[in-house]
Image (tube, rainbow over all chains, first blue to last red; front, side, top):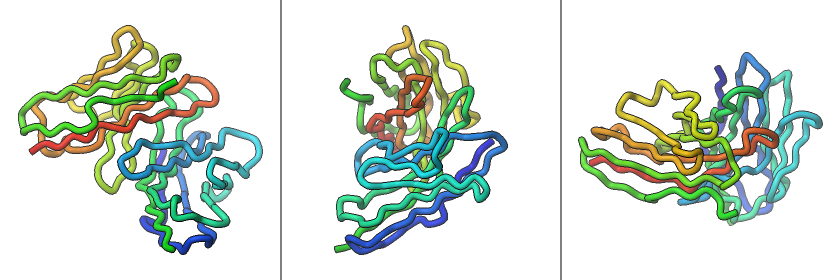
Length: 114
Length: 114
């Protein structure tokens, strides 16, 4: 069984400031890791994923995340946010074999202020 | 590639009525997933198909829920005798089933049971 904890339910930040959204996971098996973004009234869109290899993963819209196996973390970062980044962000894991269904965290609301 | 589509986008029904939702995945995707998302929470896995075979159902999926994927194409999710606790966003996602394992989500069907 897997679980995902997103430590912040809301993160307010000013435009052009850096941001980090935190994610910790628990699993008895090796997992794949994902970050999804959900804009109002839209479906989930994949930002980035970690399958294997380099622990620093770059995604769309200038986001990146670092996989830390010892700390079981996969924090999402962006060096300079825009108003358009305001959305709900979900961290998710899936097992590497079998169903590969996603287990999501409860989400972090990123509110970018001018 | 028109993405994953879901219909209807919104459904309001009275308690005790039956409802059916439809999901059309990306055409070459052999895996199809259903998730449920309640307010302020991340999506939760309900069930998934590989081609036309339903391979797993979550314990969240009570006997009132049934899903089908005839011919391995579109899928339907039916809820019988709806209850107020069924009010949620129902999300469909599809994937290739092999790398890069990315799941593409539809916009969801929002169900309100009155």
